[in-house]
Length: 247
Ligand code: 13P
Image (cartoon, rainbow, N blue to C red; front, side):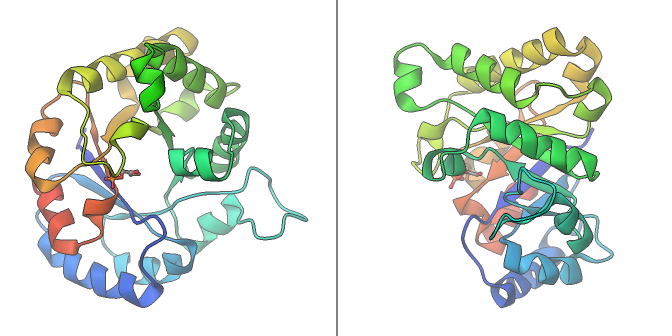
């Protein structure tokens, strides 16, 4: 399977800025041997759809409602994202967990909404610095996997991506070691094997996120069992992001 490189714009880039960015990016990654997904703010989805038409690049959103429809002012449903042209959607990003108090239970409902609408969830999990320093990383990852994936069918899982993003590595310039990433990947696959099957634990894509730059991308991509990268800050410049895609 090709490696998957995902851009997460976070709350950056208007629709027009997204257009300028994509027009610059597309020729730079024309010959890439990897799959690419770009997760834009809701207001840039329409522009993303227009610019990415007839390209293999996957358009993505950064959040979705845990509800199907109804009186939920300000929310955006999975069906709306599907119709708007999204293929993948980030869920459970640590910034949403921390700033908007999203729980594993809510994230589980969001994943179900996405799968019901044939969208691929990119589930973000990972520990805080305190949790790592107090040897709770394994416990935290196990709990996140168990609750977020609860009640799903094995055949739905192969359409998902799990992003291991240690919170202490996000936007800090501190990158997890290859051993830390490798241990997390093994643990994630083991838990999925326990709850579902060994087959799907091998098929599901597991990617890493946290302070990725063109300088460290190639080295990270050599980690056994790692299927790609989730890039925040370094995805905001088309040239920089293209260097990661071409790493
Ligand atoms: P940075 O690449 O800026 O550390 O962000 C990672 C991230 O949160 C991607 O979702």
